[in-house]
Length: 264
Image (cartoon, rainbow, N blue to C red):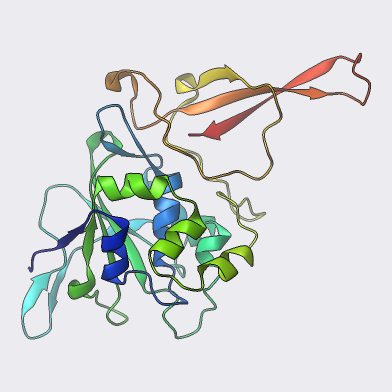
């Protein structure tokens, strides 16, 4: 197996060519993954908010099988922990991905479904390594265009809006395409369940907000709750939000309290 190059900066992502050109979806996928699938704990470890074993968002086990094209090789290093793959828009669960990841996919024989993210998962929902790759053909991945994504690059992506990431990574049609799609972080559809993070109710944190939560979620920023890691059984916290909703126009009328969950 050849050495896999690590991408540490947005400029490295740009020069790699990953997720480009249109209609490829890899940069959209990487943005969603960095903002909505993972967080950092207080030790700097990258944690998964959802268990890939549940196959939400189209995650499934990656076999890392032996490929032979004259020479036999494995795409990724052998290890004792499982690999999981996401990005196939034609697989069960991929409908849970937000519309901005899926909007270029028309089920045609083009490049709109060739990009993938592969993670190695350790106990406690810790992600050891994150890789991006692309299909060389229907069956095999392109080992020359397989890269490791550093935790530092994930942090950088988390601090960018989608349009800015696409622009800096060289996706020239980014602004037009992003504005053409009414996107949201977790689409709720009548025939699918909204995916819930792999945390239990007793781990939620109660906070108060002064205003109503916006119906259109915005990408989360770096938010790690200042708690010891041993009190975080999996990965992250969900803020359990209480907001006051007026019963009517008159300010003298009593208000009712609604509760909702906001993933940070």
